[in-house]
Image (cartoon, rainbow, N blue to C red; front, side, top):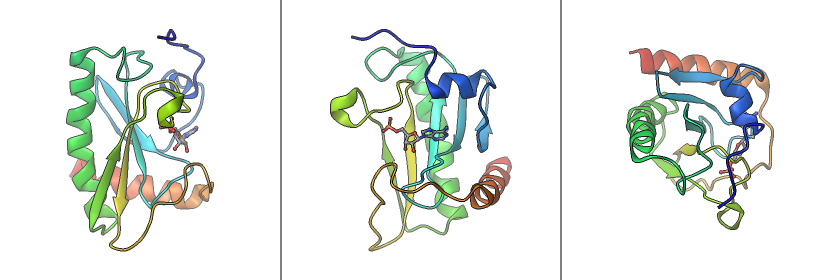
Length: 141
Ligand code: AMP
């Protein structure tokens, strides 16, 4: 098992060294928009604890991510008027993981609309700003 590398891009976001389109934060997790969304509202939930993926995260930290995912998924469906939601999480390169800080993908889905391929299109920052504002407002209730 490869050790956690604290220079990964999500660790830099957690340290405030890189910006993100934040939608939710609590003591244990941060959630922000994927800048190359595979569907409108594609959100990533990450633990604040340094974990590479499901193979090294503690049960407690994983449960914090699961709780936040369960909170954000229905809010994302409602905000983006989706018919469903795909929740996905990759572990190690063989599975498609490219950023090595655990993250859960929340992707709102429309009937009959396929997901874009991973990292195929960078979204317009104005659209991301607007989507983050709408989703974070929904989560604040
Ligand atoms: P994975 O293939 O599960 O490791 O997914 C990594 C995801 O991170 C991809 O969907 C990328 O589009 C996304 N991503 C990469 N850099 C950033 C960033 N700076 N902010 C938000 N999402 C990012």
